Amino acid sequence: MTEPVPSKVVYLVIGLDDRYNFMNVSNPDRPTRLLLDLSERCELVFTLCDKLINAGWKFQARPIEIDRDYGVNFSSYVWVPYSIDGGDPSPRTCFKIIYEDQRMGTYSYSLFMTDSHNQKIDLDPDVENGTGAVP
Image (tube, rainbow, N blue to C red):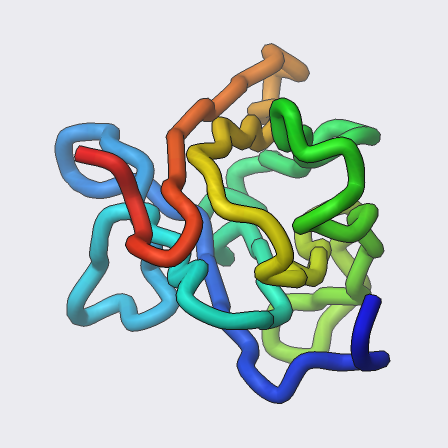
């Protein structure tokens, strides 16, 4: 890593829209597709939305995997403490990784979650270094 903490932070709050599509609901009034801005070094913070947490969702013990990165562009994940409205902590609902912006390429990343029935849910979008999501 070149610096301890990047100055840019990208928040991704994982939620579902009315049609059960996964969306970034960091701004609940304007949900957007799950796009990562990989144009510069940044910290990526992934959190489940409060609605999913209240429904019993959480990330799996290993919440993310990035294919073919080999630790060059993305750091290991670190769990971040999170609670809804200052209540009891909600374990395994928020984590962060650092994107280093050291190598060009297209990456597939997988988010691993479980629902209230402990059913495993995987989400596998592609991102292209420097240009955001691949259509």
